[in-house]
Image (cartoon, rainbow, N blue to C red; front, side, top):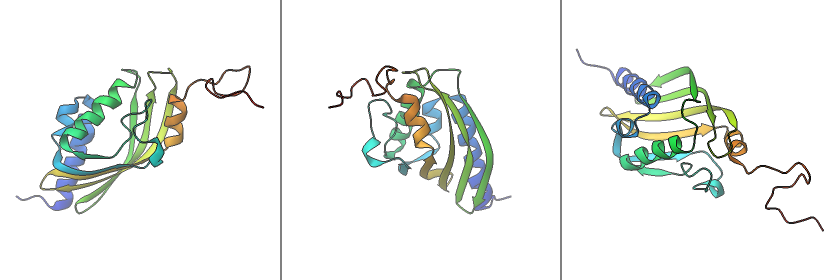
Length: 160
């Protein structure tokens, strides 16, 4: 029996989600094509920031593994959860809707962010990985603390 494109797409997406839950970046990356169209829907000036280095466009399977390694390195182990609300499949395309819960390692702040993940699967490999998430929630969790005495970030110059 042969699998339809939609069935194959769903199987790959479900396999990806399972591997992400297991947390092994190399096994996750095995599901990506050598060349991948990878985008994170964040403001371009925030890509590759010191606090959130995993936030940037990627292009290869090796980049995918690096993404998941960096993501793990900047979050508190054991303090993460993902709720998948729906997986929508149309041929080679799938959209995963859900919410992530993480804790920023640098600040200890927990956050929740709703997301939509658009994936395209061809020949059993992921060719497109586009993430749309609540970037403000993530940015706030990683932001430097604001001193209570001034209401300004610690690095901000004094008001004139």
